[in-house]
Length: 302
Length: 326
Image 1 (cartoon, each protein chain N blue to C red):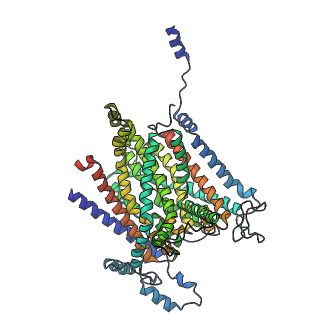
Image 2 (spheres, rainbow over the protein chains, first blue to last red):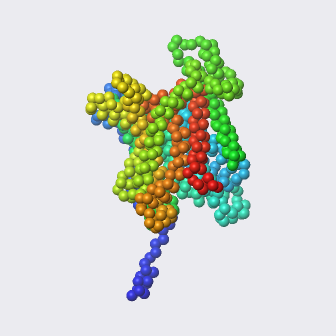
């Protein structure tokens, strides 16, 4: 009898999961994260297709409807200038999404390169980088970005300058974490082997150190998107970020919140979209952290 | 030990000096105070504009380094300069500082206390319905920017006011119509503080409860808590005396840090509820192209961050015997 059981157990095909499949399964198990991912896909589609499907363009002015409440012509009402709130919200959403993802990508890349190179090269370079990180953490970034964006040249590409500014102040904390991780990775055998084979420092960092810190970098980028969107909308709320005639969710909320008690629709539309967007991004970030972190208990068994 | 502390303090001072100087260069080159006078009707003669700008050390025709030197020697004599329209920066900061303090002290402290309590409680009930509900709620609130929370609070307060026909909820400024009864002044201030404080508590408590929940989960699973149970302590006592105490060490450092930095942390709340505090001043100086004002706010914020850092170091030493004895 017992022999039969053993035989059965050995015959039963042992499916081996690759790391990617494992992470994918763990992510799918987290219902909040899956919901968040679906939400982000929906919002990206809305931002991409919305301008083609909607009747009103974001810079159209309907001279027959100023501050009109939501009706069949304007689903979310119009602003003081007669612009359609739904079209503006879709436009602002695409700008906020673009800025959020670009800033997260840039700041994580800077953090990865600076943190890993500081730990790998050591010496005066490491001390200098750590000092710069401390410096950037002392400066209140919100005010500095606002000051710098006030003097920036205006025009269609001015939002790109905002992306650079936001990224320039977003990387220091993650760079510190990457550095402390690299400190242990650089002592591993495969890094030493690569070093003694004569690979350049840059190649070792990019090919051997950063891939082994990839879980951290993915989590950092995912959580960075939410942070970047909140920073951008915060600046735009005060009128420092995205400049007119272009618009972002922050600009719209800033405009709407001054009249929120009498004409609530200008505020409610963009605010709901923003909260939903950030919630989805945070849910995906948390889900990725649980799925990628090997010490995380919430992933359960493979 | 003293040498170590001295070296660290010196490093902080150098850091602050470089940060503030960089801010000065950035603000002086980017803000262009001359533009303030360009749109005036009737137009102001250029000589008068130039004279006014030179009087406050703001003219872009003076070399940048010369302006910087004048500003720096002024700062060492305690003079933080004037706005382009001649308002003293030091005076603004010293009055607005107290406005921020009055607004933020209760909200920040209560937010942290409530956050710690909620976080510790949900950690002991991990994955139960109450924990899941609070986790979902906090995901919602963390994803909501302060300016949305503030505006929604205002809208709800107005609809309550309209429904009851009263003016119980006040949301503009620090003081308003003072009634004619004993302690009316105090009641009026409390009414104005109520909504912004609620917003601050909501935002602060949510993020704190997430941090505290994670800390508490770590310490609940620790060996010393099991040991405490094994030697016969009741669960409540093991949790309160052994788990919570250890989980409060990082919270103590966070508390010290956030009390020091709260002055500049509530820009949105100050703006929405029209409290003329430091955060609001920082935004106003940038809008009004006030170079000296921006630099002073940055310096103030930098001092807050560094004092917060030092306070949290001291707090760790007080709370954690391992650090103190090492």
